[in-house]
Length: 106
Image 1 (cartoon, one colour):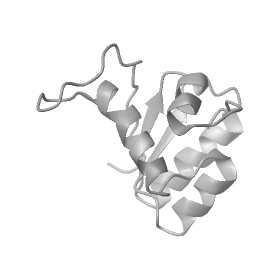
Image 2: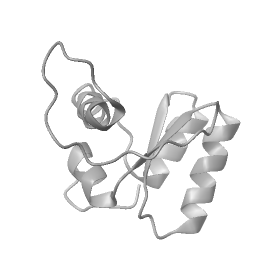
Image 3: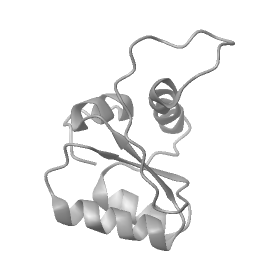
Image 4: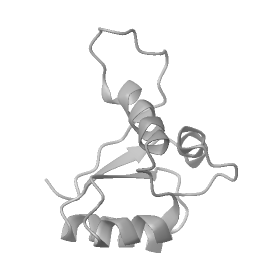
């Protein structure tokens, strides 16, 4: 299952406490909680370091990333180090979830 990709759509509504969540609702929450607990690596450089140190559990990349070399590198690193990979609908959405002021492709 390493290097497996799943496309994630923009969440429509906030999750109700106690209700089952789908991946579209859970991913933004997981990213925000990771940031709150200082467990979020943002950008290609930080992500590559975290994956190579075996401290990464999940890698999220934007569907609209316009750098095919970056996508290839991240996919290869995730496959080599058995890190799960998910796709966010856009770099803008991913940046908002991660709290980045300048939205990037990763």
